[in-house]
Image (cartoon, rainbow, N blue to C red; front, side, top):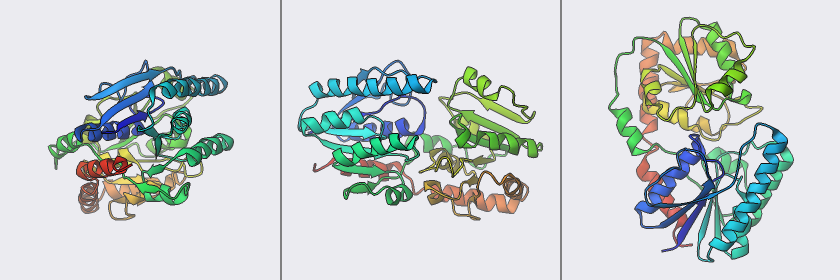
Length: 358
């Protein structure tokens, strides 16, 4: 059995390491020898996966852009050297996101089959994106995309495949135990990174416009980072902000609706895993009108597609869902039915197929 050497830059509790965790579990379950290279010193979805052999390389994220880019390129040089002495020609190098380009160079030099798993293309600045995607185009044997939108947008090589993100059975089992329970409050939920382009400020505005609802924002950030971001902001009393959570189930359980307010001109969502998780909890959604997230939401059926800049329209649709029981019930049921298409069985079968017969 060939070894699969998976590589990811920064282990945390965001979407891309979660997907890689699911891949690693599927491969180990099906008898593959799996190795994981990621930066050390952090806990995340890639920590302590049974059957996976862990290897760490140096990388420190810095809020200073110049230090961050220096650290990044240094980390990739160190990763390249480390992998060059570790890899065998028969290995499959599985690179999660376009960032760990050092793994692609080492794999190419050793004659390995290289697979890229691309979650998004909103890489800035432009020259940095051109560099990273250029390395992927030159080195990849196969590229996996997380949505039809992304696959069509980035035509890099001929051997490209689609693998939708899905929900773990552990997640769906817990969600399905919490069905049709009465909710005492109407809570609007958004889970995202603490970034302007994720629509955090638009969420603040929406909360201010709708004092009749509770707005809960869960961000992948520390308490101190939240404090710095909100410094100088006058936040409404009905807005609650939470730092990184290892368990988001309680938030989905109490929520009435889930939002994704990413700004299409700055950041196009290529899938929307938190939206899918909310759908499993029967939550209607409001999401941007472009990107992979539109493959989850049918406008007017299980949610609405609205540009986050249109806060008046957002408020109108938010109220039309939450204040109309018949509409809410129809959207809720449609969300749940759509979520059933994204099963772990489908994911495991496709994950094994991707690395087989190489």
